[in-house]
Image: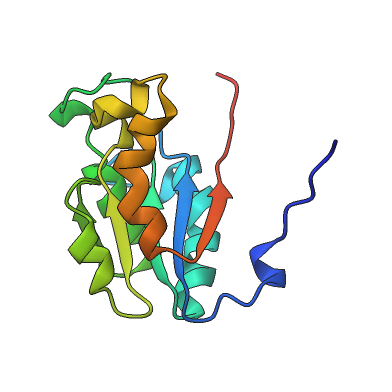
Length: 153
């Protein structure tokens, strides 16, 4: 059975809280983040949502830290890169500490969540584990957008 996904351009998203699953699994040059193909691919979607006064939460991973926090695999560079390409301030928080950050966001704000794979539950084959991690996100969001770019190396 084929499923047809709706485009965000065809859904009333004005003022909604939107989780965007982005493909930011890449090294980002802090000097020239605008040259990164992954950031270029994510920017139009995030910009569109911000213009619609959505609360935008970007969920992504980088590398495969298997539940360990590693500075070298942080999404901090992606945060600054996306902030630079959008010319907009961004907030940054871990998934585990995101509840209040999301709850008190203002319309038109952007929040980047730290590498989802820093959570050991992300690697767990038990779906209940990852559901527990993402429960607050699900409770606080209205729309989920899949916005990834796959490139064969």
